[in-house]
Length: 153
Image (tube, rainbow, N blue to C red; front, side):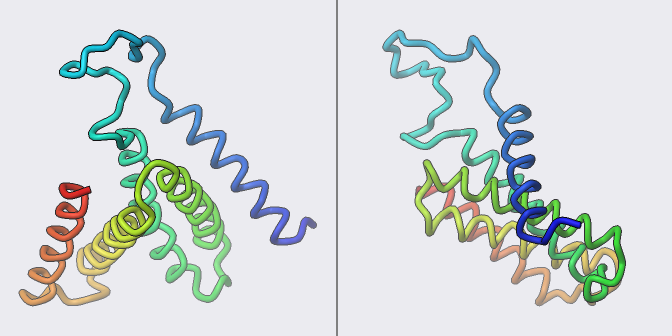
């Protein structure tokens, strides 16, 4: 049986391949012509649209692995444990990819914010936590902060 580091490396490599094949921009969208008002290179203000997309997907996967970690009951339940490992590897790989073209602090804050909000919303939707007015307002504030970070970066 392979040790955990070898299995994790294999999962990380597989996640990179999947992210590359699934999320790369289709061919034919890039141009070398210089039309700054209609740039088709997939960059907004010097930042890659694909990096932001992958960052959001990675934030969603953070919520998945956090929820699966709780459901695994200290790694005693196999299916949630497998979901945890796969989602964790994919989430970290996506975060690393996004950090190649986005500022580290912004990327990490957005990633954590998305994961935290979705994890809390899931817990409230499933009845694990109470949905109080204060909690909902604070989560909306966190969403506002994440959107604000995207707007100013």
